Image (cartoon, rainbow, N blue to C red):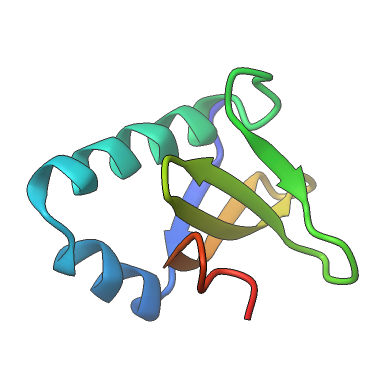
Length: 86
């Protein structure tokens, strides 16, 4: 059973502002994450010091919170590589 994906307003705005091809790439990865967040082909990693994870998509980073008990993935931020961890 796939996870429910919630995208915060800040992340939605960023996603909408991207060019169509980038938006499609990110959406495809989010969909893969939704169906199998433990897939080793997805470049995911737990972030140190905070209860968040990151998904790497080229030069973009998707920062998300994963709640396995209720099967929810909440996308907090979508940032470029240089800005993601500030």
